[in-house]
Amino acid sequence: MFQVRIHGRGGQGVVTAAELLSVAAFLEGAHAQAFPSFGSERMGAPVVSFCRIDNKEIRRREPILNPDALIIQDPTLLRSVDVLSGLKPDGFLLINTSKDSTALGLADLVATLPPDHYAELPATELALRFVGRPVPNAPLIAGFAAMTGKISLESVEAAIHEKFPGKIGDANVQAVRSAYQTIRERCASRA
Amino acid sequence: MLKQMEGSRAVAEAVGLCRPEVICAYPISPQTHIVEGLSELVKEGRIDNCEFINVESEFAALSVAIGSSAAGARSYTATASQGLLYMAEAVYNASGLGLPIVMTIGNRALGAPINIWNDHSDAMSMRDSGWIQLFAESNQEAVDLHIQAFRLAEEISCPVMVNMDGFILTHAYERIDMPRQEQVDAFLPPFEPIQMLDPARPVSIGAMVGPEVYAEVRYLAHYKHLQALERIPVIAEEFQARFGRASGGLIRPYRTEGAELIVLALGSVNGAIKDVVDQMRADGHKVGSITVCSFRPFPLDALRQLLQGVRRIVVVEKNLSLGIGGILANNVRMSLRGLEQPVFTVIAGLGGRPITMHGLQECFTKALAGTLEELHFLDLDWEIIRRELHHARSERRSGPVAENMLKLRLQGRSDV
Image 1 (tube, rainbow over the protein chains, first blue to last red):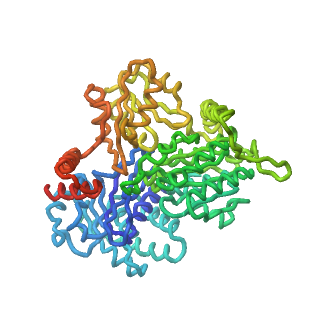
Image 2: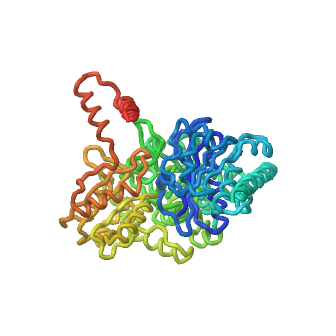
Image 3: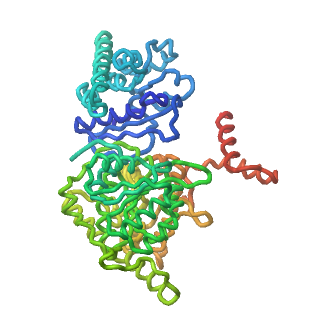
């Protein structure tokens, strides 16, 4: 089982991100379960969502305490919430930022992760450029796909088209292609 | 057809496939996306001959369903939490009148204190209402139970409540095998009421009944539940034959062969319990579990057969009957009457507290070792309870408990 936890703020599409991830995995024939942390959702408040992916039925429904991958949609959460808690030693960490890990104060943690298990992606900028709205969820899912190889770019695009038919979907697909490319190139340049 | 979808949306589509004729709902909190999804389906013309009635309260929602069901229309509504309490008088009337309404409860806690999260307090508040109460373990089962619920309700003319854990199921996206319309049509015949308000053949429904036959009318309502005990497994078997998967039934045992410990529960927590059973079996412990799908009627005999001779029995439940303990556990004890087997209660998940596999496994390990208390509260913060009890003893006007506990909890965090 592969477990993903997504942190962000109300209005950033955190819940939709987990949903898109689960749909993409489903389209590849996997079992996937996505759910939000439950609460009275408000714009700007910290929000968490979860996604489990497996090749068999997923029966457990507890919040994910030890994720295989963490997606941080808002780096300002690093200061206020223990978003990194429980990340597995060989886990993946993807952050929506244009800063580097040292500027975020994460250099020590990143040093403990395997190579190419950490990535920064300016997802909000990509979303603004292609979609015109600061909703970083779709580019981050593409970044996740590029970094982990757990799902393909094609499945991410199909999930986006299913959720957002029409122009918004097309614009998001442009953003996810760019995001995917960015992360692939970074991994390739380090190799 | 396989789809990846949210539980609420899946149930809305499944209810739509059952061809309801009247759907009435109060769309304001506490409510799920189910009726929102159904209102869209009705508006898009995807449910033939169906009227969606937006009402002003939950009491009105079920009252409208009572009226439409009495007029011979297949009727559906959904609610949760305080909404079900506000409906309470109509809940008893629907079953007392024997009207085969189907209602979804997206199970949630009850106030006070105000809490919007999952537990089974709402359903348990209506356990004696005369409704059949089924509990879904997954969203797939929630979908399947609704199709079975209409069939069962109309066969015996008794309302059915399909319970699915609020948020944990209603808001979860997972894989659903959505039945096809022809499959549902073949399984669920058109509604043929046993009583109907029909100007061509006038009757009254809802007579006042004095002491001369009230008890007999009540007995006949109980008799319907005895019938349901027989019909629920038959309907589940037919469902499996037609749809190719096991859903519903009275109870579903999991790895109970040779078990020294059997764990029982209602609803979605059974998934985590099964995962723990697998882990403990892999470590050589003889552990199994039973999903109780039908809570009313309660399958006393079916449980007795499986539990007889089992050394340890643990009931995990998301409710607390103040002054006595767990409601499901007490029902399980009833199934073991005359036998000397202790039944341990684990109260868990109240007000949306996550039930972790780690916590469950600790309890089951203690139960095997004989060190679990008869009434155990999973992950209870005894420290803040002690502090509040001390505070209450030291000061007459100690103030509102909920507010005090929130403060203590915050202080506890800042102490760390």
